[in-house]
Length: 284
Figure 1 (cartoon, helix red, strand yellow):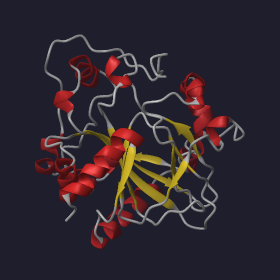
Figure 2: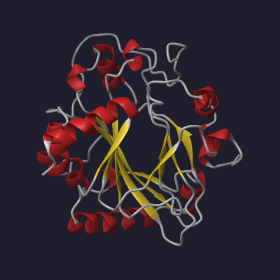
Figure 3: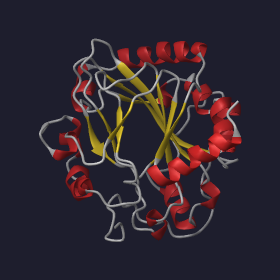
């Protein structure tokens, strides 16, 4: 059991640095099963998939396998949300992301898409990524890298966001490995973890991963949540309910008794906010 004091510190780190690590969330049985499921999903991909997603390695929706419902609604994770002060989190989407041996680095990027709303320039968190690595990670096999505080402060990498967003396919294929989005960045820190640890990060945080120089695949399961959907500004909730940012469609065959409490759709009449991944000059 994690103490209230520790969880308070973790929440403060998320607010200030944009991320935190909570150790030993997945038990060994769950890790073993997730490895088997993930490997089977990876094995079903053809060569084209790995070429088109070379920067990630591969990226497969968790909706492709019903066992992932147990991860989405994993009790220890839901308890983490509660301990951090969020009693009603909502699931958005999730992916199996696996980098093969000798796979290139993941480019620097951020995933916030509501930069044309004032809330983006505050400490109020809107969207989180939850990363579960299924192997121990190091710089050698492609551990996570982050730039603490970049969710709230302008960084030199922000000037490259338009270029990336307008050329996503080229960056995913890693056609220009010497580009700044693949290089060492000012203020970056490594985030090596043990298999089963949980990394929580603000969507606006700049993050990337090293190349995989090991001889084994390095797999991470990344799930996206709105920790406090009902507290989000209504135009953002309307946007989420009306376009491609709406929650992932979960198959009918899934155990919906697990996932239904974590899914939502906006039912109001407010005009949706227009999606924007480009921070304005408000980000200082």
